[in-house]
Image (cartoon, rainbow, N blue to C red; front, side, top):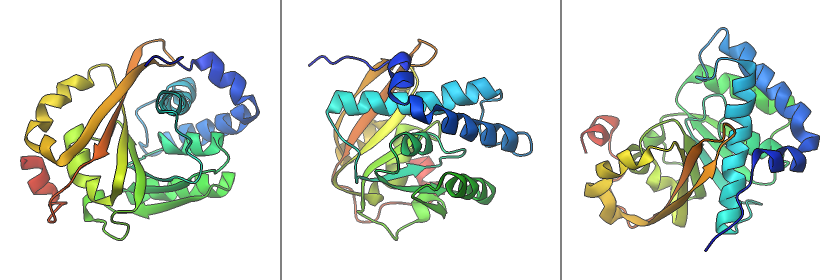
Length: 230
């Protein structure tokens, strides 16, 4: 089944009323990044274009590709750092989904709390390692992440937090297929895997990998040390 890819031009037209807010958010990230590393994007333009706009672009294409509406969905962002990919989407969609962020670094959580307050965002920010967090087991409908860890590590660390029929929606670069060889020994615990490619804001190919939750062992997740050895 084919679908029309959402482009950067489409995005700027659709969310024209949000651009000033998103640029203010980019400025907050840039200023914070001068004193503490919260993103690998160093310039204000790169933060806005590659960090913020591309996060929205990836999810707009996801919604188009899977004919899915995020409204009222329970979504978890693992290791969001500066807030990518979830905060830009939450701003663009006017708080219309239920967002939780699990971030292991306290200073990054503090920054995200400032962003939450500045833009009146409906987001629950939790300072924890995801594999050590159990309070919301079998709760989320979508778990997302960008530039945090491999497909294998994310699945092993966070699958317990997905509800049945929940899915991972992972933003990846063009070479994500290199990670697929690593999941062979845990593939039996995964549901259907799919995804798609889209043209990012640099007109390069990026990918979104979508994995449905399978039946996982009762003793998941393991410790970080054991996860790294699997």
